[in-house]
Image (cartoon, rainbow, N blue to C red; front, side, top):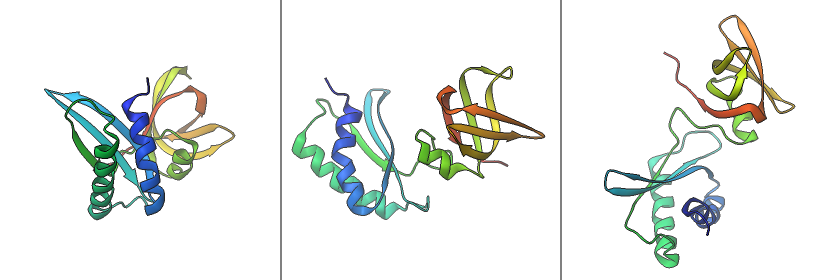
Length: 152
């Protein structure tokens, strides 16, 4: 049986393609006694606005009503990924070059599993992160989680 996130991705992708937006992530989670279906979207410039989220929400809601793939009641939320955007696909890492990132690895590399610093390069399936005065090269297949971060 397909997961809710996969079904919703199939339903929302044509809407996003038409509006020239991209799907960042879908979450279907229970918090307290309520279920939430969260769809995170973005555009090429990384400056998605509330109107774009509203259009996607309205169109996706109509499709979800037509197909009815979710058996229980839920709240639909469509929003931007925010300042701490998850990085999952190669294109995400390419767009994040020059930005501050937080990376956790599946296994220790150079004695660390957590790296935070500037993503200075992404090529040949490897990330180069500069932390203070030291740089680390992390193979993409060793990345467990990655996201952009805000530096204060």
